[in-house]
Length: 139
Ligand code: HEC
Image (cartoon, rainbow, N blue to C red; front, side):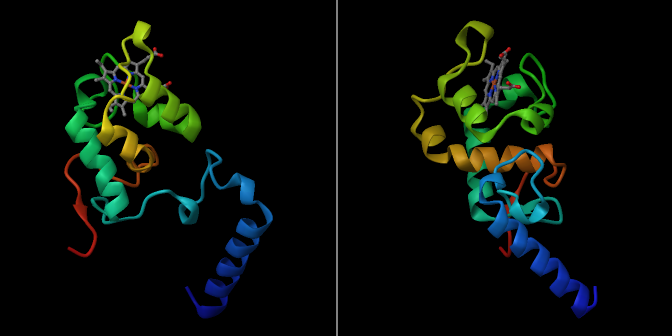
């Protein structure tokens, strides 16, 4: 990308962020607004890494599958394309007991890492983060 194009892209991005502050959490986030950072598919920022660790510690994969593509629970790759962040938080924290989704609000780890968990699963849903093991960027 030449310098002129880069500047144009930066200007466009700034304009979008300044003009549309309420849309940052809209479903179709541009890469710049994504809640996670990833390089090479499996190296993520520390925040996103905590989300993955929480996913592993809680063994969400028992029901949603190791690649989040669904088992007894639905595919979260699909769900995260439609759920808002608030809907996601409600589903995980309060659960849907009668439908087989446990509530995780009693877990300190989940309550403290709910934003990271969302970031990780959003990255999986966007196809930016690969399934499986992750490591921290630059380490
Ligand atoms: C014992 C099985 C089980 C476990 C463990 C489990 N889930 Fe679920 N989950 C489900 C089921 C079943 C549903 C579907 C509930 C329904 O039909 O509304 C669900 C629904 C969800 C939804 C809402 C999906 C949607 O499209 O509305 C999210 C988000 C979710 N689970 C995330 C998680 C996360 C994150 C964990 C780990 C912290 C987890 N789940 C652990 C069974 C499970």
